[in-house]
Image 1: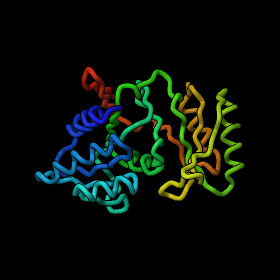
Image 2 (image 1 turned 120 degrees about the horizontal axis):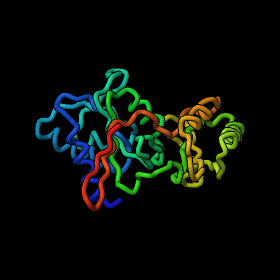
Image 3 (image 1 turned 90 degrees about the horizontal axis):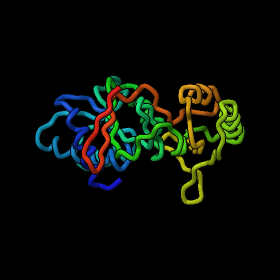
Image 4 (image 1 turned 135 degrees about the horizontal axis):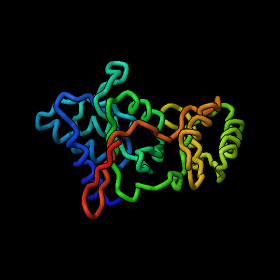
Length: 229
């Protein structure tokens, strides 16, 4: 996705923001563009407060002047704006490519609405071409890894389940967890997979966002398309 398309998607999402809103602020390169737009508008007098979904987003918010709060101080939010790695027409998402899926899901669930910004290549008929991130505890990693494989097999899913690494070490989330990426190719029943994964004690959360997004903003060469749930 070109930066131009990311900016267009972010601008379209900003149309949902109203003065006085309490916002969930997503993570990723497209969310970064939204934060920059938000910062400019705050500089012009817009009054909002934001709950960032990662330390990365928090740092950019501070840099551009977006006031921040926490879910402890502000447990109910009006709107979350975030990106996605994949989305289907029911607005079920795969998120977590940037490693912030747990905080992203907590913030989205605390919000009355969620607007998702992406380019039109992210819209798919069946989720799963993008590997599904699953956040897991470092303790018991081997057992959890095998349990994820067994859960997938019980649903007829197969494909490599690999520990995410960075600089030769396991990738560590802001919450101190690991991520495994499950490359299933196709996930025809997201709800069933969600339930199966959450039954595994070592799974903290997964990147299937079901029933959370209310609007999908897709940027393409032909302009902006909105899908609503």
